[in-house]
Length: 220
Length: 220
DNA sequence: ACCGGCATTGAACAAGTGTTTAGTATATTG
DNA sequence: CAATATACTAAACACTTGTTCAATGCCGGT
Image (tube, rainbow over all chains, first blue to last red):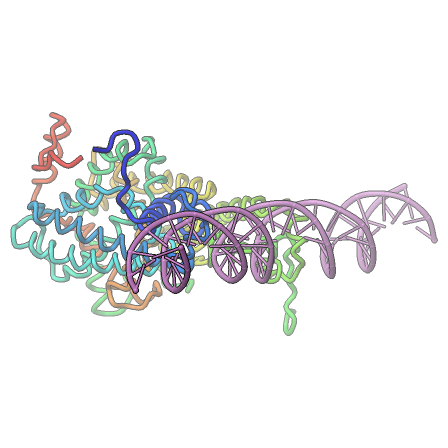
C-alpha cells in the first residue's frame, strides 16, 4: 500500500501537534521554538499559530493529547493483565516520547503534567491497594502517603537519570543503566535501608511529643 | 555599628553573583535575565558582563561559589557531629537558597550541578559505609549502587516537591509537607515496600539467565 | 462558472534578550 | 599634579522569539 511516499493520514494540525510533542519532550517548552516545530511538521510558522492560537495553546493541545494517550496506554496495560507496579511502569515506559514529554512537563511544573501526575497517583493507589490484597505489597497504615512518596521517587529518579547514570558509571541511556538501577531499587524496596527501627521509633516519639529527637535544637 | 544603613562589605562582583544565585534559584537559568539580576544588585546590566564576561560566565562563577559553600556547609555539619544521613541532609537543607540553586541546576543538567551531585554522592557513600559499620544502615553487597539510587530518589523527590505536595493535600511549602513525607519515607526505608522477596528472586533469576521473568514478551 | 470559506504562506512587526561600545567618574600610582 | 587603569553607566546593536497580516491557492456549494 504505502511503498515510496508513505501516506500520512494525520491531519495537518495533528502533524504539528505531534511534532510539538517531540520537540517539547526533547528540549523542553521554553527552548522549543515555533519555527523549529513548524519546520519539523513541514509547514510555515504562521500555520502553527493559525491552528492553535499561540504557543501556549499548542502546549495545551499537546497536554490534552498526551494525557489521553497515557490513559489509553494504561488501560491497555490493565486489560492485558499487568497487575503489579513494575509491569505497569514498564507499560508506561513503552511510549518513550510520551514519557519524555511528561518528564519535561514535570521539570517546569506544567499544569498538564500536574494533572497527569495526579491521575497516575490515583491509579497507582488503586494498584497498591490491590497489591496489598494480593500479598505483594506490605500492608501499611497510610498507604496513601506511601504511594505519593514512592511515585515522587519513581519519577524524580527518572528526572535525575543522567546524574545517577554518571555516578553509576554507565551510559546515560535508560537501557544501559536499567539493570544496575533496578537491582538496587529492588533491594531497597524489599529489605529497606535502615538496619533497625530506630528512626521509626524516633519519628513516632517526635510525632507524639512534638520534640525533635536528634540533637539539633539550634540554628533555625 | 550597623544600625540604619547596614554596611554591605561584599564587593560589587560578589553582590552581583549573590543576586544571580537567588534569581537562578528562583526562576532557573533560562528565564533569569541579566537585566533583572543587575537590577537586584543595584547596578547596570553592562557591569554584569564587565565582571563576568557573559551570562554563562556568571553562571560558572555562581556554580563555583555554590559548590564551595555547599562544601563548607557540609564540613561544618560533619564537625558538629552529624553522623547520620538525616542530620546531614537537614544540614544541607539549612541554606535554602543554595538548595534551590542546586535543584534548578539539576533541572536543566547544568555542569555545576553535575559536579555537585557527584561530590555529594562520594560524601554520602562514605557516610553510608560509616553508617553500616555503626549498625544504622543494613549492610549491602552493592552499597555503591544503592547509595546512587537513594540519592536520586532524595533529590528527585525534592524536584517533584510541588506535585507530591498537591497529591498529599498539604501546602506546597517544604515545612508543611515534611511531616507526612518524612513519615512515609521512614516507613518505606525501614520495612521496605514489597511483602516478600519475590521480586528480588525474580530479579536474581533474570540476572543469571537473561530471561525476563514477568510474562510480557510482546510489544516492543 | 462564480463565490465564499478554509488552509497556507511569506514577510513584516514588536518585544525581549545577551552583548558591545563609547563615554564618565573614581581611585591609584608615578 | 598628571597619567593610567579600573568601576561603572547609558545607549545602542544584533539577534531571536512569538505573533500578526495581507495575499494566494484550493476546494465545495450553488
